[in-house]
Image 1: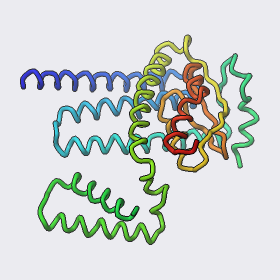
Image 2 (image 1 turned 90 degrees about the horizontal axis):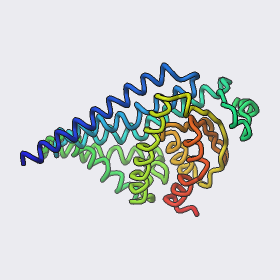
Image 3 (image 1 turned 120 degrees about the vertical axis):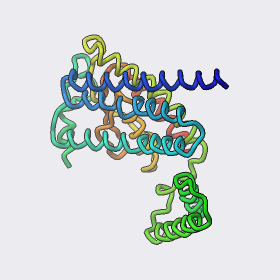
Image 4 (image 1 turned 180 degrees about the horizontal axis):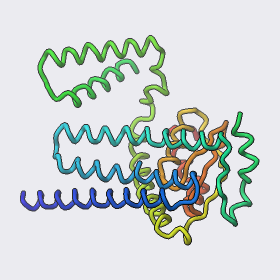
Length: 121
Length: 157
């Protein structure tokens, strides 16, 4: 049992530390990226893997109790609500008419300038 | 049928959240679950969208696959944050969606947004506009792998 507890502790530490690493990267990305659209991508990391890892690490630590179930419920709710919120933000930005920066070599697809008109209806 | 499964789901959530199993509290739980189910039926929200039991176990397999995709794309975006000069290559494009029902389209659009590096900006009739952070994540959406999987779990092939 000692070994099992030690293994659980190590797994918890690993999950929470990697989660914290992704949160730090998120903050750094929010400062570093050039425009709003790319910052949404950076924020998406804290929404998904970082929060899953931190809550999962806490669930490992609380064992087979109702607390674990509640943590898993939080993860499930985040799984559905966070993309909805991100979509609302991106859609509002797009409808307001902010054009994304498009890097060279990708212009051959659909020019986003035409599409901004279509999003306003 | 859906009414009974709604009562079962809400009752399970009640039991898992409460943690106090006395006859009085369980009785309150049964009463409020039935009340909620009756109100939901009167509001006419118990349909294939409000309670998608028809997806069954397929959606769980899809979530496991999606979780793995999220892990991979998180690593991609983290690399892009640390070395933007090398990886940052933003693009915006539209792809066709092959799902016909609204529920399938929403599952697909939300899955795109859930994987970091790609964000759904606009969802029209059968086209979805995607903003991608790097070339790798853009190619992932353009390959249509996720689209096929969502269509498969919706059984709309």
